[in-house]
Image (tube, rainbow, N blue to C red; front, side, top):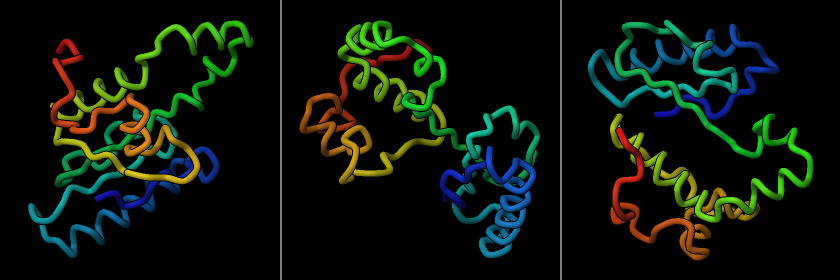
Length: 150
C-alpha cells in the first residue's frame, strides 16, 4: 500500500520525508501487526533510490517506489530542437517497449499494477488511451514474447 504518493522531497527535504515515512510505517504496522497486512510502499520523493540506502533496513514488507518520468529527464530536456526531433522520431515503438520492459521487470519482483486507467489531461498516463492508440496491449497478460533479457 502506497503511504504517500510523490512527496516533493527536493522541496521539503529528504529528512522530513523519511521522518514521515518512519512514523507512517510504525502506525501502519501497529495496525496490521508483524508479518501481517500489505507491503508498505514508499515513493522516493524524487530524491533517487540511493537517498534511501539502508532506510528501514530489516523492516517487515517495505518497498521503495520510483516513478521515472521521461518528460522530466534533464538530459533529454537539454537537447536542442533538432536533436529532440531526432530522438522523438527515432523509435516509434518506444512507449510499447517501455511498458513491456517495466512490466517484465516488476513481475520479477512482487508484481505491478497500472495506476490509472483513464485520465482527462494526458494520454500517456491513461491505459485506455494507450490501448485505443495502439501502444499498449488490450490484454496486458498477452503482450508478446519477453522483451527483457534477464
